[in-house]
Structures are given as C-alpha cells and as structure tokens.
Amino acid sequence: NAGVTQTPKFRVLKTGQSMTLLCAQDMNHEYMYWYRQDPGMGLRLIHYSVGEGTTAKGEVPDGYNVSRLKKQNFLLGLESAAPSQTSVYFCASSYGAGRSEQYFGPGTRLTVT
Amino acid sequence: AQKITQTQPGMFVQEKEAVTLDCTYDTSDQSYGLFWYKQPSSGEMIFLIYQGSYDEQNATEGRYSLNFQKARKSANLVISASQLGDSAMYFCAMREISSGSARQLTFGSGTQLTVLP
Image (tube, rainbow over all chains, first blue to last red; front, side, top):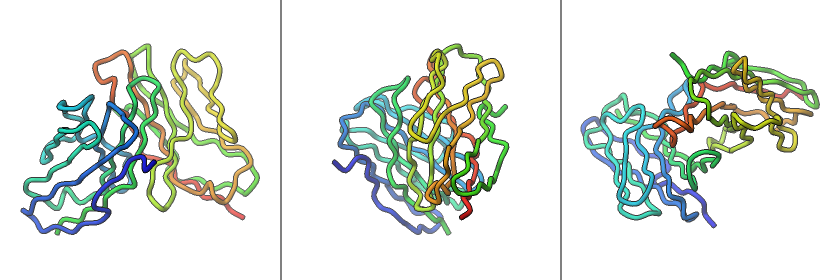
C-alpha cells in the first residue's frame, strides 16, 4: 500500500517552460488536493477535486491547471513557469470532507530559474 | 484576516518535558474541524490529531492532546514527555464544514519545535 505518491521529487525549470506533476493514490479516496508550501508559510491550496472528472479552484490557482481523468490520479500543470512558482508542492487525498484527515504525498521541490 | 494563527515561530523544550504549541482560529461557522500535522525535516506531512467543534471531550492520541477552548477559539497542541524525534515543524489547520469550502484545509504558518537533550 503506497498511499500517496508524487512524481517527480525534484525539478528545475527555466522561466516559460511547462511541466506536469503527477499525484497518485491507492486508497480509493474521492477527494484530492494540490498545495504549495513556501518558506515561513503554511500550505496553501491551489486546486482540488471532489471526484473523478471534477476540479475546483483553491486559494492560489493562478498559473496552474489540473485534471482528474481517473479517480486515483490528480495532475497539476504549469503551462509557463515563473520564478514565483518556485516552491514545494504537496498532493493530498482524503476519503471525504468533515472529520476525514488528509493523507499527504512526500512533496515535489520545484525551482524555476 | 488570517483564519489560523500560530504565534510561536520557534519553541524549545527539554527532553521528557511537556510543551504546548498555540493555535487560534477565526471562523463564523458553527461546524468545523481542527487538525494538527507534524512536518519533520524530511518534509512529509504527518497527521497527529483531530478535534471537531461539537466534540465534548478534548482529543487525545498517545502523547498528543488538544486543549480545545471553543469560546476563546483556541486549539493548542500539548505534547507530553517530549522526545528528540518530536523536533519538527508543527502546523495547525482548520476545515469549515458547514460552509461552501467544506473540502479544504486552511493552515497556519507553523511552529518549529526543537527538543533539547
């Protein structure tokens, strides 16, 4: 049981390049989330999904797109990377809302130069 | 306005002693949940404890307990008998259940705890 996995673990991009971060969970969770973590700050929600084929914006969605074509996968895309998107990105999933805890992936460290 | 406030950027505690990490929150919802997560230097986020706004008892999980004071809107984490492995960043988070944002967690800025031998 792998839980939540993220690919890749590290990446360096040049300004203007694009990339996709992959999140996969094997717990059959309905809800999935993408957060970013910047120094001195807690995690901030980028986008989330409440089920296959659905996505919604979080607190800081600009510059990112997401897709949830399969229940177990949640993709985060950067179409034209900017230095302000240098951050650590965490994916999380949960069975539902309410009392359900979120299970986090190990994070992806992205640097945009 | 910040929804979750952690006023202690850094804390030190002697091994085997207890420590309290502060968290205050702001919400107009009647139904909400409060979470604490631990982030060691390796980076992963580890769930520690949960308190629901309607829970009558303070939550406890092993050496972790949550001092929930609803009227003061505080949800402090108490770690008893600190261990060197408790050194980490600790985040308080809230989910407002009754509002439209029922699915997301809002995090505080964290407290870096260092346990001294």
